[in-house]
Amino acid sequence: MPLTCWALTEGFAGMENQCLGLAEALGIPCEVRRVKRPGAPWKYLPPDWWPHPLNSVSEGKKLAPPWPDVLISSGRGSVAAALAVKKASGGKTFAVHIQTPYVDPAKFDLVVVPAHDALRGPNVIVARTALHRITNEKLTAAADHFRPLFAELPRPLISVLVGGSNKRAKVSPEIMTRLADRLADAAHKSGGSLAVTPSRRTGKENETILRERLRDVPAYIWDGSGENPYFGLLALADAIVATGDSVSMVSEACATGKPVYIFDLGDDGRKMRAFHKSLREASLTRPFAGIIEMWSYSPVNETVVVANAIRERMKAKSGEIAAASARH
Image (cartoon, rainbow, N blue to C red):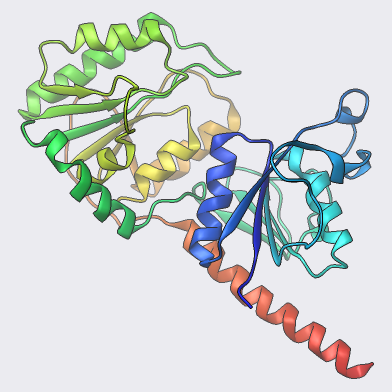
């Protein structure tokens, strides 16, 4: 019988995409389950102390048998439910957690953490970038699908992935103006054009600034309606500019093998600074100062690396179970 898989998160897109990308790399159909954290005082305690984790569903199907062969969870809010599923399955569910779980990592079969996290252990895999859903096949299909959208824009095509404000910092109009002016400089100096996709976090005011400051530049700026051309921007770009606030967005850009420039939106904290420092030192990214140069590197796809590790560990675990059954 084919293997089954659940992706378990609190519903945040970045976390969910990492889980789904890993399941796709494994070649296993995956169902999404979403959970919520308990209220005080439980939310301040370690996740494995939280009450009734199997009843923590926020939307979608309940956490009930038949239990999946593989469970991929991400984020602190999913830890309690993930461990409860593994226990309820009698340990048969192979449980993978993405990000630091804030419990003993040995409680999972495998834990995947970014290099800038301190957690290490025999069942901990350290990934240079976030896991994602980018594959060569998807990029090829996206290039074919979206090519007409950018056909009239002069080359080089500079794709721009714009994030925005988060819990750590607010992106001011001054910062967005600085980004827009550097983008205009890059387009003029290169003789090329821009393909820009804002995010929900960019905000209407900042989107307006981008449009006004880039009105004299050959550019496509997605207005949020219709199909999101994000994959097309990755596939068809000659170079990519990404704001540095999103680990997932930068990781996806680095999966293309194309020049990736990072525009700093502000102080994102020690872990984010360490993440960007590691990419610069590996010659995967460069700071964006309004000039585009071309270079190449081997595309980074940690999703495939982790998927291969899971296959090996599942094979080893299956052998251990078979050996234990033979002894009894």
